[in-house]
Image 1 (cartoon, one colour):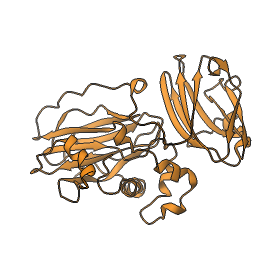
Image 2 (image 1 turned 90 degrees about the horizontal axis):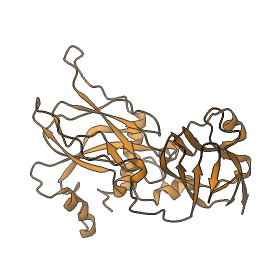
Image 3 (image 1 turned 120 degrees about the horizontal axis):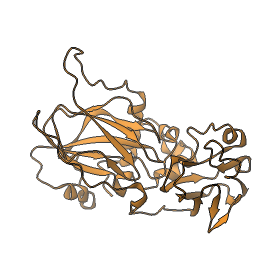
Image 4 (image 1 turned 180 degrees about the vertical axis):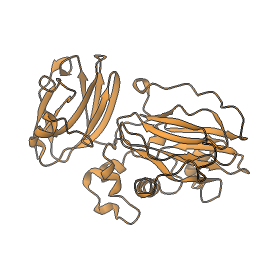
Length: 317
């Protein structure tokens, strides 16, 4: 898995910079013509809407349509670098670091960082021609940005919450396919075609969760089912890592969240573990069972759904 230095440190530094930095401005001179902005999307685990080539002067925005936290980080491949993207990614196995060797560099200051279902503030400018790489360092399963904040550049990972430590053992999104090379051409040239889109529901994951168990649930028109049967109670163990694989087979709008009874009833679910509203496909998230698990509920909080689509946990040591 390519790290480009230490992935965990880089991911924490970049993501915290995105959270604390002032939004990037698209134009220093307000009287100048506004640049073209291309809105890039993020899903599990790919970028969408990013053309194969863009003219210099373009700016990139970023919207996260996935169920996990995502970021848009840009690397520029040095002009004298002849290696392909695949060769750059393979260097770690040889004990080499493309960044330390000057083969690639970070571009555009702080990355564009977005929680599930949100749009990042600011844009990333493409000022120089050349080969670029878009990628996401976020570890698989992260849905709560506050966990990433606990792994800042001055923080000791050993002091991070157990949930954050467990997530950092997971592969980064770039290792699961959230990486794309593209060209920046001369200003005024045409925008290139889009690469073939990869629907979220058909993404093939290259790595399964390192530990824990998988709970597969299906959101039907008015029930949450497991193996074809309505499920209203899930047995879990405090401290265990559970990967929820949630399928929406109904074609209706559903979400799946975990929170207190009041949070769920009142639909106060922003930032809670789970997946946002969607109408189809399979979404995954990883949850470390907390000590107060028996106070928590799971379900769909879309208006009118929770009365039939809910359940509780039975937890033990």
